[in-house]
Length: 268
Image 1 (cartoon, one colour):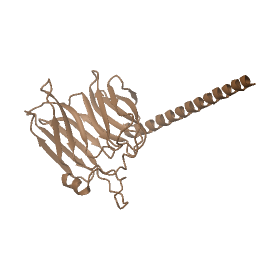
Image 2 (cartoon, one colour; image 1 turned 90 degrees about the vertical axis):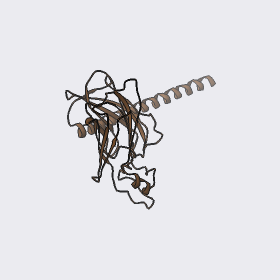
Image 3 (cartoon, rainbow, N blue to C red; image 1 turned 60 degrees about the vertical axis):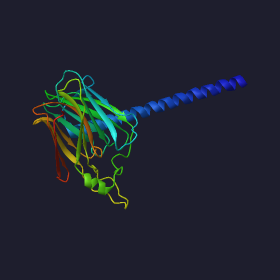
Image 4 (cartoon, rainbow, N blue to C red; image 1 turned 180 degrees about the vertical axis):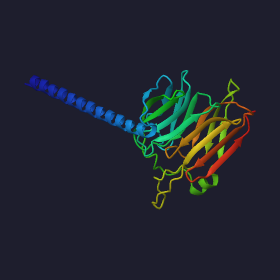
């Protein structure tokens, strides 16, 4: 009797495990289909009906699997291969405003690596989309677990934010190639999304960077069009090619039409 009961129990356990596995598989398929449908909709809104190919041979998107701070999620885009890439867009699929930024490159940009920080509002796929000089689009994707980044309150006091609004820093590194210089541009700006509440429970009006332009010796390195998915106090890392006198000029404009600019002397 004991043997028969044990055998029956085993059958019940196996059947239960199979049911759980089947249900998990079904849920995974539903989630995949939902993500694909969301990306199709987002991509259509940003890029129209242009076809998009697999970009894994020329792009690598690096994001944390689980972000420590959803308001400051680090994103790295590595550009590989021999393709001439003229633009890269970073898209956070499930954000209220998915397009975190589009970089359009100029002759002073070294096609190397881009780094930035973004807000992530909920668990989501993130895409990097490259456009080549022949007008074709290529995409790669990664999944990131983070939530609440678009509504997270500012890390600084309001008075402090206003006092340093638009101030910039440019950190540069010396490399083996003196004409190819890694740099990090930091801009003080709260990048208010319009979804953040203050202590009184009122929503802080949206005010965010819309455009950043960087030139080297009068030659464009990149133009960046961005919005509320860019983090507070943006930090953008890139590599530039020394052009002209090597001086760096940065111009930025936010959604209130405030314009900020700064000149940095060439690295000596």
